[in-house]
Amino acid sequence: MKILIIQQKRIGDVLTSSILANSLKKEYPNATIDFMCYANCAEVLKDNPAISNIIILEQKVRKNYFSLFKFIFKIRSQKYHAVIDAYSKLETNLITLFSGAKYKISYEKGYSKAFYNYNIKRLANGTKSNYGLAIENRLRLLNPLIKKEIIDFKPKIFLSEEEIKEAKKTVLEAKIPTNQPLFMIGILGSEWYKTYPIQKMAELLDYTVQKKNASLLFNYIPNQKEEALQLYNLCNKKTQEAIFFDIYGKSLREFLGLLSQCTALIGNEGGAVNMAKALMVPTFSLFSPSVDKETWQIFEDNKNISIHLKDLKPEIYAQHDEKHIKEHTFKYFEEYPIELIKQKLDTFFNEINN
Image (cartoon, rainbow, N blue to C red; front, side):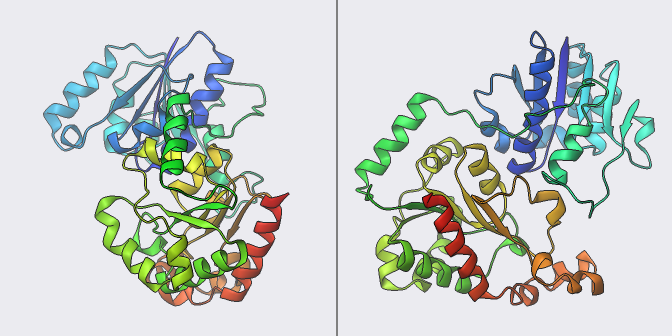
């Protein structure tokens, strides 16, 4: 049996959809399971034993109809038994439609019956969820292929011994103290509206270093260095001395190796938080006020704590829709009481010490 999973978009989406491959491989151990994603997300799937092949859908292919249809018929030649499209945009609609698969599975939309023969209804936004709707809705996509209850569905990242060894070597050579906590700081969200104001983030980092005498690593890429420096310069002198600014992942796999050596990740909700959870690294995250908390507050527990405005001031969401809140993101970030965040940080520090 050959199965294709399609999940475009960002790293967090791709990592979350990898649970489909993991569950299918347990149910069909002899199956070939391929995974289609964008090039910038592929590394998060590397060495996953459930995935046979990672297929890249390049931007130049997506934007050229001739190249896209050539790609579509290449996929058709693979003779997949099932295609699960967790993304469902025009190019993946067409890829699935012409795949020749017996099972063409995606989410129910107004047009979806033209492309898929299994159209799965999502749980509505706001539905109470034990694991987060991002998880539960993806598991629903498996209903046509797996009839029994799925009980192991946490995303996983697989690092090699060599990658872990290199990360340990980097920490050692940087002379990062090993007798105190090391926190990875998610300093930026994936979009402007997902980034907690840096003045307030600097205050939280000052508090973290004061309370825990911790060392800090910043999660950024070279073209974000200027923004990272802005945050660094807003921190007090003691915090600056605790930041190992030039130690960062120069690739996604390097970042994952460094993250695996950290006591916890603190920062903006997003892909880095999902990756930390997949590596069993505790997380403390700040949600943008316009991000749907029921979908992405996944696997919350004592060692994975997040703060969302909807938990603090639900009345705001009764008065305004997501579009309004997104347009006024920084106004609503001001509604997050920083003293409450510090209290929750204290609770988090106590939990990860246990």
